[in-house]
Structures are given as C-alpha cells and as structure tokens.
Length: 125
Image (cartoon, rainbow, N blue to C red; front, side, top):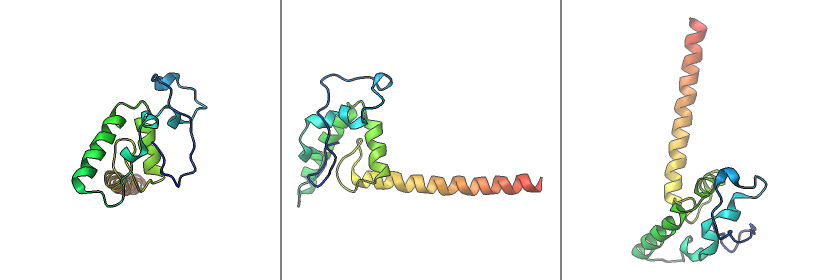
C-alpha cells in the first residue's frame, strides 16, 4: 500500500510480473510486491474535504487495484495489526477495518468465555 507523505516506510517499486506467494523470497518484505506501488497514493488516501460521491468512487477504484494484488492478505493484516487509521489497505477502507477489528475482538471474547466454560466442565467432571 502506498504510504502517506508522513510515513517512514520506503520500498522499491513492485516487479512487473506477479510472483506466487510460495515462490516469493522469504526475506523480501511483502510490500515490495504490492500492485499499488505503481499507482498514485491519492487513489488510496482521501484528499481533505473530498465529496462523498468522489470518495466512494475513489475507494472502489482502489479496491479494484487491491483485488488483483498478490499480497492483498498480507497488506490487510498489516493494516489491521498497526492499525492503519487512513486509506484503503488490503481492499478495505478504514471504516471496514474498524468493523473487522470489532468482530475479531468479539470473537476473541467469545472464545475466551468458551475456553473458561470448557475448563470449568473439565474440572468438575
């Protein structure tokens, strides 16, 4: 994913052809293969005071770029783990990433409750 101007992440351009994940050099960072490295950062990050219709159109165009990216999953996970507060990363907008994170938190809480319940049943049995 292209970085906003304030970011310190500097990477080389994406190679012209896609390399399957399993054949990728394991020492190379995932973002060196990101398709978006060839696109304008403005496609992935909103300009100030962008009208809603323009924002939705731009986000859909960015998501189309993401859809053909060989490292989309890695990009998405990066954005979820950071968490990246702006832009389209891994095919998700900032709002969509917040929803995913909330669902993950709820799932984790449910799994912890289930584990505690299972431990209680095992101890009693």
